[in-house]
Amino acid sequence: SGRGKGIVVYTGMDTEIGKIATSLKDVTGDTKTPLQRRLDYLAYILFGCSLILAIVVFAANRFKVNTDIVLYAVALAIAMIPEGLVAVVTLTMAVGVKSMAKQKAIVRRIAALEALGSVTNICSDKTGTLTQASM
Image (cartoon, rainbow, N blue to C red):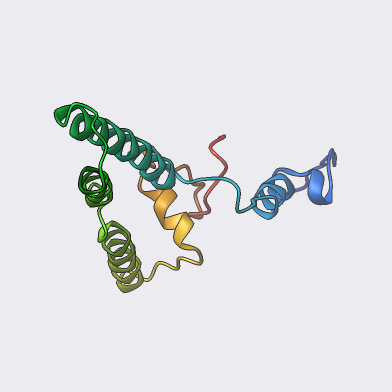
């Protein structure tokens, strides 16, 4: 019980809550999560390794190119790519969403769960509302 005066500085989307809403709305599909960046990096590493191994195959045959050697080099390069990687990542994410759902957490997008894996600190106010890393 008391009185107080306040000065309104910002309203609507110019407030801190409005800034958070704008940042959530502006998220596009072009931003990559840390997991996607790591998988892209792994793809480049595997591609480089497959090229090096193909060159080693040709060098072992003294760069005499015939059909059998080309077939062997291509087969070796294709064998470098893990076929089950996509399935393993998808199943791991699904298990993560399921375990979070058991704890009554709602995940709207899998990308949010991927980004959550690299979180070190979570800022929240006294009501438990997540803030935008500024207190």
